[in-house]
Amino acid sequence: MLIDSHCHLTDERLLPEREAIVSSMSEDGLCALVTVGYDRESSLGGLAFAETHAGVWCTLGVHPHDADKLDGETLSAFRTLAERDKVVAIGEIGLDYYYDLSPRDVQREAFARQIALADECGLPMCLHVRDAYGDCLALLKENEGKLSHGVLLHCYSGSPEMVKEFSRFDAYFAFGGAITFKNAKKNVESLSLVPRDRLLVETDCPYMTPVPYRGRTNFPRYVSLVADKVAEVLSLSREEVEELTTANTKRLFKKMK
Ligand SMILES: [Zn+2]
Image (cartoon, rainbow, N blue to C red; front, top):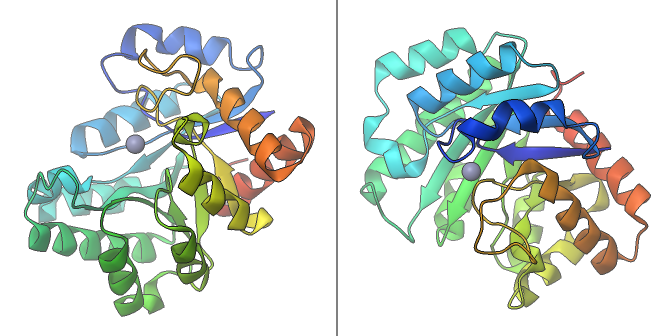
C-alpha cells in the first residue's frame, strides 16, 4: 500500500470528491493521505477533515506565496494545534522565487519563523522550494540546530548536485507527477541519487497530474503512476517501492500510525 505524502484535500477542485477519495483508499492501494496546509484556512480545514477521517493526516503551515500573511496570531494558533494527533508536520513552508508572490525578504522571514515553529513543536517540516534552492540551503545552514525532527523537500526539482547538499541535513525527498513528464531528465537523475531510505512519493493533487492524465485534475490514487515510474528508474519492483516509501514516510511523520 502506498502513502500520498502530499495532497490538498481542501482545494476546491477536490472538495466535491474528497469523501469518495477517502472511501476508495484501500481499493486504490492507499493506506494513508497527508493533506497539506498552505495558509491558515487550509491548515485548519485540513485538520478538521483529518480528524473526522481515518487514514487522513495533515500539516499546518503558510506557503511562501502567502508569506506576507504569516502573523503572530497564526503562529500561536499553529503552535497549539500542532499537538493534535493528526498533525504530522509543519508545512508547506519555504521559498518560491519562480512566482515571487511575496517579497523575497518576507518569504525568508516567514520560512525562518516556521522552521523555529517546527522545532518547538517537535515536528518535521515539509518544504516547498522553487528556483530558490541556494537560499533555502543557506537558511537551513543558519538554522542547523532546529532541524532535528526532519526535513522533507516536497516535489523535489533542484539539481542532482543539490541532493548531496541537502543530504547533509539528513533530508527526505518526495517525488510526484513531474517525474513522469517527457522533459523530466533532471528530476529522474536526482531521483536516482536520493538515498533509498530517504525517498517518498506524492501527488500534490490537484496539481502536477502525472502522464497519461496530464492537463486534468490530479487525485491521490494517481500516486500509483508515480510509484511505477520510481520502480522503473530504480529497477525495483512495485512492491519494493511501496514497502520502501511507506516505511520512509512513517519514519519521517512519526505521529502516523
Ligand atoms: Zn503542495
